[in-house]
Length: 571
Image (cartoon, rainbow, N blue to C red; front, side, top):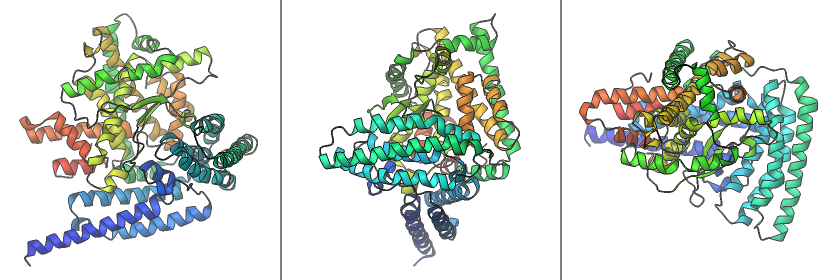
């Protein structure tokens, strides 16, 4: 056997060993301890299982993660081909991030909302997608519901001196979550046929509702008064989380410089366009005018649906990226248990879902309890510019189009695991890229030059929102910025309404690295420029985008290695 053939055989052997270990990690640890993720992925053997937050389960998961960390790390990266080498880094990052969450960040000890939202999400994943008959899905839901009171009991055992803001968010979300079980779920299974099954569901569902009501009372009367903990994760944990999740090891002070520089650049761009629109007005006055130009709340869902034709048509005619399917996402209201911290989101089926393949574009409407003034402030986030920007981000060519490419990802790991800098970075990058390529010009998504400028202002306002997240996330979690200072920063520097600023700051307390939008966008822009330099006249924007999406959604560092053939800096 020649040396070349032997080396190839050895590499294939290591590739097979890695695939075996990665498959075992996904099946024996990742989905075993996060069964709702299994349902979401399309693995319906997990449909009757529910997350277990008992200390025994947490300790067992930690032990299993450490075993697999050693097994994966023992496979030499140099012995693998390029895809498997990247997958090895993704799996190690997934393991280390989960260990960091369980052992250092410890949300199971600090965050009351993860218990109630985990229960709600577990039910929602069974309810939303019709992957089996109503009776079969109801049977799975009943199995999960039977475990939910125990899940909420674990919260009482585990939660110890949580941050007041976390307990407050849980209290804010629980009435909507309880209402979801009272109204939405029974309605969704009204066409179930088996009378005995429906009677059993009535019992388990009533028990869950009672458990939620009891949990809410306990949060208000017992936990909230003793919620004096700190939500900040600290600089060391923050840096580790970025390394494990995103393969970004840039020092935090340097990252902060990068974020602030992008913030200033976008502010200057916004101010210049505002001056072109209204020379006699201050930029913030033009921002207020932009905010007032929004659909009525009752027309918001239709406003998003109306963007799809022009976006899809522009992408195809201007060769932006290949869209692998003609099927459109379904626009609907955000589920109740997600409304406190998100304005819009895309909910796509898992890569192994064979039956219920619909994708849902969720939009949060104003809460009925809001005053007219609060509703107006809330709707400023859905102005004519940000509606387009959000539709680009969530659907065309953002999250939805990226989802359509997932079947072409090169491995099971790439279809199931990835980096948020890739997913959110891509979606945020497309907001700017589409306008840069000409969408939003008169006759191309805008009726005249004035509306075209408003669309750019909306895109820049969204960019400033992400820039503010970048700065706030680092500074809040490293102790340099208080909650109230963060709210003020979103308003003053991020050009957001107070209502939006409060929601965004709340989110940042529990989502510390939500800088990944801007961080990922900047990494993608640098990758594009570096590839342009390398390819020269042969560079094609469409082929770049297709090649990017073909990789799945790994950290941008891995995409760079695949497209450029080197490990040059991502920023």
